[in-house]
Amino acid sequence: MSLIETVNLCQKYDQREILNNINLRVDRGEVFALIGPTGVGKTTLLRLIGLLDLPISGRVRFDGADVTESGRSRLEARRRMAFVLQKPVVFNTSVYENIAYGLKWRRMAKSDVHRKVSDVLDMIGLTQDKNKNARKLSGGEMQKVAIARAIVTEPEVLLLDEPTANLDPVSASGTEELIKDIIRKYDTTIIIATHDISQGQRLADRVGILFDGEILQTGDWREILNTPRNRQVANFVGVDNIIDGVIASNEEKVATIDIGNYVIEAISEYSTGEEVCACIRSEDITLALSPLSSSARNSFSGEISRVVSTGPLSLVEIDCGFRLVALVTKRSAEEMGLEKGKQVYASFKATGVHVIKRE
Image 1 (spheres, rainbow, N blue to C red):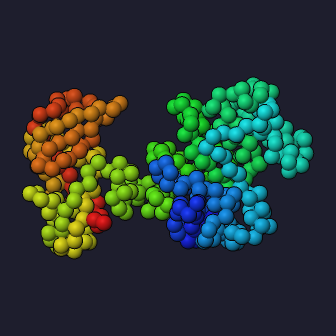
Image 2 (spheres, one colour; image 1 turned 90 degrees about the horizontal axis):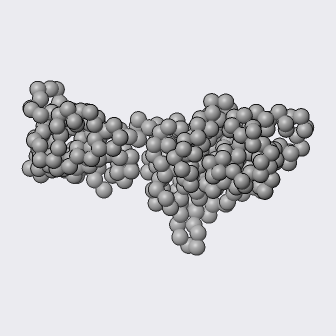
Image 3 (spheres, rainbow, N blue to C red; image 1 turned 120 degrees about the vertical axis):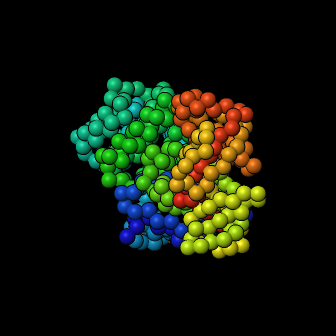
């Protein structure tokens, strides 16, 4: 049974629809990432899941019970959750008192409070600063204190809203490491709202892609990256090659896709005549300086129109009569002498093409 479930959840603000029929399940102990651009409703959904707001329609179930409207049920469920806001909130008191706040509110014995707070202070690396006013800390340290204050009560559910959005790269990395420590140490169900795809990859077991108030796809990272459900998801998860075409033939699920003056072969169940998009990840394209004799069903020659190097990798844009983008290591690009105007051969397997219906 799922620990958290939303059923046809909808929300409006000032007559503007924010969320539309959100159906979502999160299992106990799972780390789930809600991913989407800014302004698509991630924070709104997190607040509904955390029972801070009431939906205009739909239900929220927690541990099998409907907790949508009953004040008592909502309060009981909220006591089993903790919510960390995007902008860290700390009280105008010491780091120790900030973290101890929830435990004291629960009237825990002083010795237990000291033990738990000391353990968490050690986890976040702020033991030496325990008597320092929390508002004198850096942004990254304040975020750690906010997360520590949430986790010290050992909630069943931890909700994190854009936990590194306002932090510099070093502080963001430290906060991510803290979240990883929490995942390892506690059996906590964690839901993270983030616009950062790579962060979701690093932290989450499973993700949900949220666009314009709707969940477009859920699944593990391999599924989302390799088999995006539609063009929006494909664009968002970084598929560099999304090529419009029409199924010209399909024999035993080996489809030929007419893309104009060229054809692409792919594995697909779509029927002849259907309008589709061929999605090819740039890392699945092999480049060579001469024609390759390989098992790849798709091979095209073209002229390099651009090479962009970022860190250890290079994106190579090729004009094959249609635009094709390949990803190679920077070292390979240098060894092959890949530069604008150079002739290359690009190949990819039919199994490396994911076909989606054009909408």
